[in-house]
Image (cartoon, rainbow, N blue to C red; front, side, top):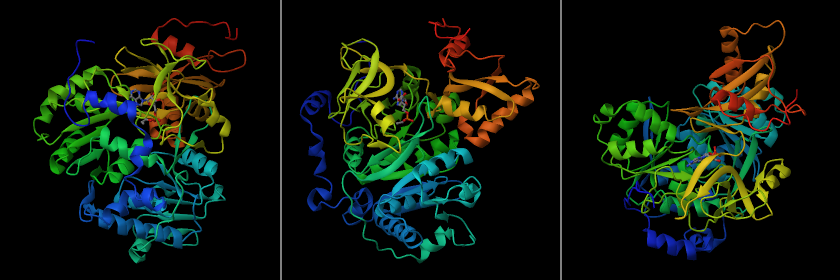
Length: 572
Ligand code: PRX
């Protein structure tokens, strides 16, 4: 074992238990806690809300909400009533029914959570959209999934191209003084009027819940569909990995527009009957520390980018806050640098527990349990019930310390069940009908710890958000000045990677700084702020294969001063 191992901090099971549990555990063992285990009636929102509202947790706070203007608390009983109301509003003002798609496109607020859980009570498939998405991104998702309705705000309505979406029946607006029309419903007004009683629509374990669009290296964003049965893994990992206990105050900093914000911002903690804090508005160092102090946060799930930003703000600031409530700290989304782990020990006196998973996996897969020695830089070990391995391109399992594809034995509860409208894409994830291949390369050491090495494809992780270079390139070449474009992730100390674009211009365009800014704005307005390239470099011509594919690998090698490797397929 390496020398710099950080010993156990407590929580969860101990290492001996881990080995035992991992050997004997079956997911069916984790089903017993759900009411459907007895009744056969399945609905994830019922399990997350009503089951607790009808128990000793009735008056326990489910949700604290805080932003610049609001400070609210909702008990499980109140959540039951508000989500019932939301379900009634959606039902009464649209033809939405089981399996229909409804999108939620708004900043974090209690109404977002009512709408999400209300949509699930109605049996619809909910597509949460990150508030930074611009018109093109919103259109792609609603169009691909043929959404019938969207819940949004007056500020964001301009980015919903209602006229170009013939299937879109209704727009529910969350705001003030909304003028209702055939198409537009005032969500808050109707919420007040609606009944607080609603019988959830009962579903099967394999029925859909959330549809998260995510990026790959090629093609448009893909709609990853999760199902009810994912709740089994979400609850079990909320206990084992988040280590949630009855008295915890838990804060997941992720937005529900991303999978962490649903799986562990809503489902995991609420299935466990925990108290969650939600902080709206933008990231600000002081506000974050203040939130921990004010609410006495005990369990905190965030991302390397956020930790690096806090780290960048200096260690003096931390001393102004009382962060002693923190008991368990976790991270997800990108590699957690050993320096950050070291910083966490120094300033919080807490280990930061890395967790690895993906939109497609639907729940945590490889993690550092509270009770495991941490090897800084390692993602940890597979959750019991999960079989992870390093395989070669043929699906052969490789011995310890060999680099290869990080793969998971197909068939865990939270695994995505389809890619919307794209069965070929779905199938392409699986090797020999046995392994799900993640697209990450990694190795496993002799102690069974997994170490992330990089993406096999060109997917970019910038500030913890997954961006497909193809989408950015497609948007770039819509710009009138651009003939061709290649996009790469360039390593960055704070953001993990930044997006760098190489572009070739049409004759007659001058490579100026104004043009760079114009291009940046063009992508920002067309896709999303986080997808806009921070760096743009003009080139006369881009490296391409003979078949015309931009060779991002060569661009990256140029950028990083690395050997370009095999150029035999390059044109000229
Ligand atoms: O490359 C891995 C990286 O994020 C990818 C998944 O991105 P997304 O679907 O947006 O989900 C992020 C949050 C669940 C992975 O293929 N990634 C995620 N967690 C880690 C990570 N890379 C290194 N270490 C992690 N802990």
